[in-house]
Length: 271
Image (cartoon, rainbow, N blue to C red; front, side, top):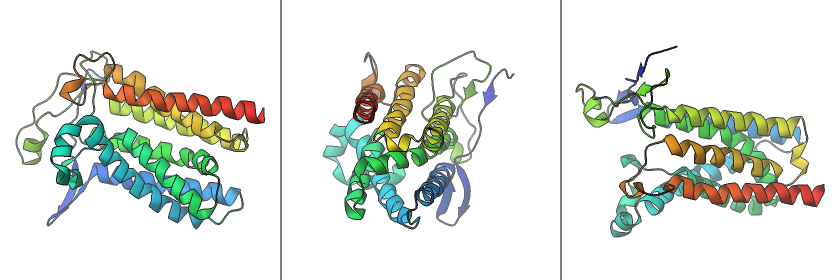
């Protein structure tokens, strides 16, 4: 047990000239690599050519980046970005939204499924197994960025995060928050649990034959946990202050409802 964890991790792993490898980028890349290997396993298991996964993940990689960036700009700061549209392209300044990334991936899968003549939900059911570890590692990237953490707590695993990160990266002394909920870790653990559940559904219970069952479970697990963790997480934007539910929660509700509908549909259709 710990009194408090003072988190001084630096967001940058190393510099080589103008290039800087950040933990967030590494977590993103490693997550996609793991997700790709999971999908290769599934394709082999079903007698499909695993090389088809490379095209799928190229579509998903682009869909994730575009969707997450547009989601942040349009969900959290539409007035600003619509007035400064060129800044939407400035991804190096930060600002990605997981809900937008999910919409981007779903759009990418639709295009991929049509191209490869595969059923849309068939691909989503299997892809969602590989996406859960990606989501978990991205949250660990947020941890290294000292962002998206929760409110004050006296729990023994509380973290003190750096608030003047830019100054800290420039070599100045860090300024810390009060001991706070490490909500990045909470979400990452939930997403790992979603991976375990969906993989077991596929491998042990043959849920892949119930169209929409695995993807529906994924949506409920990912966005249901996100909804409840938001209650102890700091708001992302000032306009969320005073709202009964913040933007992250409002955006999560439709995904959870779609997940419930998919599960009910799969049970009725193939029950």
